[in-house]
Length: 425
Image 1 (spheres, one colour):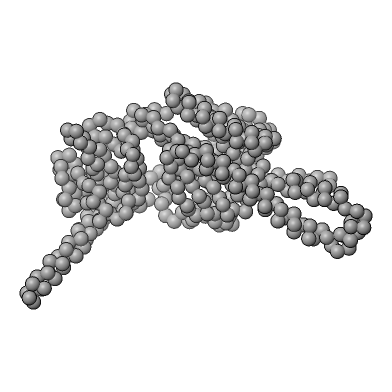
Image 2 (cartoon, helix red, strand yellow; image 1 turned 30 degrees about the vertical axis):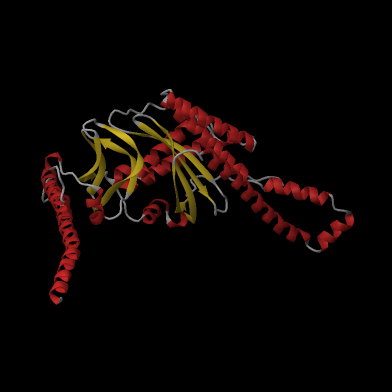
């Protein structure tokens, strides 16, 4: 009886030991890659040698994980990756179809692994495992292949974020003094360029996000944290592209806001983005519209965008998104700018007071209490308007496939130009 117990303990110990040995072996291979990456950065080896070493490490990792189909680059399954690489870093519904050289949309979330293992001054190396569909006779198997992706970094002087921000300031000042369509277009184009430039800057500097933002904007320009509710909607799917609508809502902000943005994601090497020739819109163009009219306009524009994509008019579709952004921003501003409405309410109340009531009001410092009431009324109206906007958007996308999640956003705001006007009052 004692011998059987000892035997069982030995078997159990082996099962516990095997994952530890695997993890240790994988860590060893990754450390080899980081060592050779450091050697490349210091000039001790060249790029071709680095490729040879990473290829050898990839082959060793495949053997450790028990990859099959070595002649096809080493084939792995999800269950082989998760115990070692941990939880997936993302999920997606588009997967590469092998032998057909295209991407295909599936009806379920497929996990993706992407991990930065080296981040130097010259290069960044990621260990990736992306899904593919492998067709064999009448069956489709979801498979993975490990890959080391080497990305070369742009020199920081090429990015020149601070210099580009100063350029935006100059263009904004020009537009402020001469608000022509040409100046507006120049400002808008440069704004889009700097957004893309900053994304590149952020991706090649994946340190703590707050530190990067402070280095660009300064800690004095940090604003309060915001808890956001987000819906990422699959708005439309074509054969080689997908249109995503992202809805962001801030429930606990002092000024409750909602953002809506649409963008197109191409799939596969055959996809080609059409040139945009979008008309420029400003929120000022829609400030006089009633909320019901804005709702109707946004609803109609989304219908038109779907029709555009169905007809293959990609450029025309995306230009309509500019108008949606302007309408939504105008609606945000109108819904939060309720002070004039409240002032009018209390002005009417004061006009109904008798002379005796007015005297009593002044003697008891009634304006202090009234100011408190007005502030409370302003918050009530802003919240009411926000909930109405939120309900409209949630209903608008209720029948679409979507992902929902919450996250905390830390915001920075750097005012490039300010204009103060003095009124006679």
